[in-house]
Every structure is written in structure tokens, then in C-alpha cells.
Length: 209
Image (cartoon, rainbow, N blue to C red; front, side, top):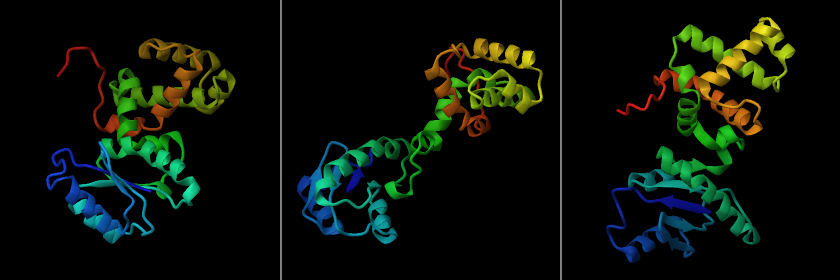
């Protein structure tokens, strides 16, 4: 299963019939459908680097799904569709077989960096030394599932100091750390905190650009 994402600046310039014939030729299949995002194709060809390069030279990007038997094509289409937003956001082709099937793997570096920049902005905008100290405590506390003693041992801080810092972080970030969903979002954001900090994330003070 292959899904092609149309370049924003090129919307079927040669007409739908010629576009359909082009994809049938390239992927050696009649099972091609034009869609609102580009096209979907079922092919027996291996989408190798040469074929991929030819498609990308036309400005297109692909979701290349894994091999599937006929009864599993519907599921393969759904899997490919789930990856399409990542291609649209990053502008890069995605091969399903090369992905790490985790939240962070599927999210990708760019979207993950945006998440970290948004959720952790008040911390990321601080001086490097203070920022790293606070991120270390938050990462340790979340990794220990909120256990104060385990966090104190991991960070070398006193238990009461850990509690004070976590309470301060909850206030700085304006979040309720008693909520499991909030803790999960912060844990994911922390996986991309370093790249978000490098890009110069700063708190959103509402002044705009």
C-alpha cells in the first residue's frame, strides 16, 4: 500500500487522467485511486530507492506501507493513512517498516519538538543551568511514577526538596500533576526537550510575533 501526498504548489497540473496514468506506469499497477491528498496505490513492486527518487523528483512524498495479503489491504490502508499527517508535517517520505512503533517514534522529531516547546516553554525559556536542573527533576519524578523517595535517590536531592521543586514546576507549567494524562503528555514532551531547547524555545507571553 502506497499513499502519495501531493505537493502544495502542484495540484494535478497535467489533469487527472494523465496523473492517474503516470502513477499506474510508475508503480506498474492499475490499482490506483486519486484522492483529495494525492493518490493511493496497491502495487506488487518494491518501492526501492530508485523509484522513490523518481517520485520525489516530481515533488511528491510517500507513505510506503508494509507488505499485505489481499484480505489485509483495508487494514494496510488505515495504517498508511495514520502516517500521512507526519509526511504532511515534515515533508519527508515515511516507510512504515522503518518506523519505531511508539508514541515518540510516530510523533517524529519536528512534531515532538513543537509539543515540547508548547508544554515546557516556561522551563525551556530559563537559563541553561536552571533549565537542565528542573528538567532533570521532572524527568526523574515522572520516570519514578511520582515516587518521592525514588526521585530523591535518583537525583541526589532530599525528599522534601524534590517535593518543593515538583510543586514549583506544576505552578510554573500551570498543570495539575495529579492527572495521569498530564503526566503522560509531559513525559512524551520531555523526550524532545533537548531539541526544543536548541531551537530557542521561549515562553508564550501572548505578545505574538
